[in-house]
Length: 168
Image 1 (cartoon, rainbow, N blue to C red):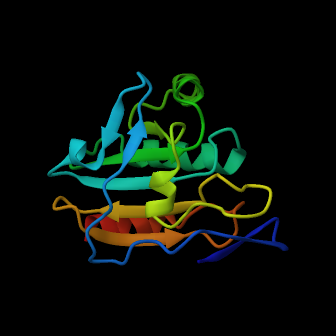
Image 2 (image 1 turned 60 degrees about the vertical axis):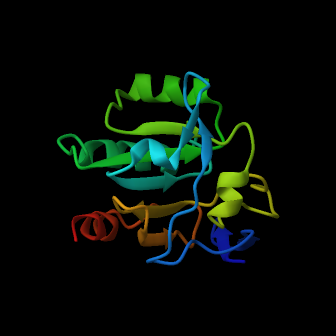
């Protein structure tokens, strides 16, 4: 279990820990905008950035999606998957309005096993049932190469560290 804060003073807990660097990334089943299932293997032989956020309907989560979208404007060697509990329709509307074409939104609407398997499911507090803000980078062979659990829910991840790890 990990502890993060909300608004600097409220401690909230996750169900576990992020996967270890070097470990095989857990497979997942997430929902695409067309309601089909997305799995880790759909991006075989590509690096993946999992930008895990509580909800795209918050300023910090929205900014995170925008920043990764901009950083991946000309990248073909990796994909950014923005994972949240938002409905796929809301994710699609957000990406359309924001003109985000370099990230793929995926939803945990059908179940929370993704958040459980990646150790980011909030198990208490006002955000219970949502995912903690985190970055997980997976290499072409499916191994975890970088992780960051953001310690304060309202803060943005360390983009530079994530992008440096991706380029290593």
